[in-house]
Image (cartoon, rainbow, N blue to C red; front, side, top):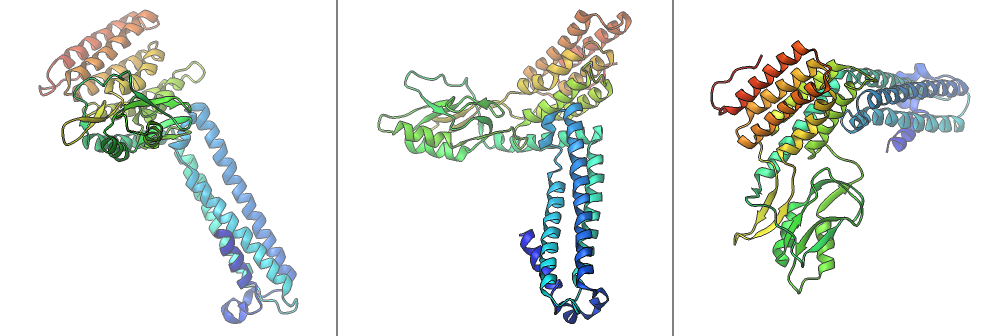
Length: 420
């Protein structure tokens, strides 16, 4: 589309009748060779601008991958800016080709040259776009910007997940075990599970009287042919056809998506914290900032309806049972790495205890407060076992951990205090 538009525009503005149709552009009437040289110079400048924009973006992505996480590519997206630069370059190239072709066909002594002004306008637009891309690129590589955008994308996924789960019934009993006659549902391709077509699964289960159980969770990797789950069916059902139809209700892609996969966002934040705490980078300040964003996400998750869901028909019979991550899974994804790698840094240990305190206070379910207390206890145990924390500071942290444990033993409706 851009190429066609550019070619048509360049041809029209380089035509013999362009100066007559646009008399206010007669000042741009020059000889034919001069116009061709001007267009060649303009497109050369635009090639330089595109090269600078692409080089800058490539360098930024290399920096982000090395310092933070290669999985940030799908979150800190700069593809829109690159697409704009490429689109303008294609438009300008086609414009130049169309203009030069038309100039070659025109009379050399009276060739109108509004096409040069059009090329200068496109050059100005390309320059503005390239500068905007470069400024946006450098702004987005700031640590605070990366962490904030990752947190926002993860919170957006939690809101989508919450809306989806509130529309379903939480599983009130343990997941059904596969009976001997269970028929496996095989993955049709290799990749990561990124979502489910629940209306399709429910429709198939009702139509054929099935009991469907999906045991792979969002974010899990499956190889082609591996079992996604199982179903039971009546004898008259065409088992292979139904299994394939059910498999089409499970969306598998070559890369994880942050759209519904909350664990992916937490995994990226954990990767950033782990790298910051590594001996090669040694940036505990970034690790603490990452824990701040994790706290925001975990506080949002701690009272959400998480875990397995069930689709029940009008007779109260279970039709579809879906395995989904528990809060404890998200908690482990977020804090296991920072807890292990940060145990030698007293400030990181203190920050982890703050996360445990604030997340635990936001929890109204005893089992989730207990899971958070276990995290706090494990952090202190790791700090004491590794023995790299000063004895006086370790004693202070142990007092803080006991205060956190006491705070989380109380009912969340009671007045709260902050552990010091």
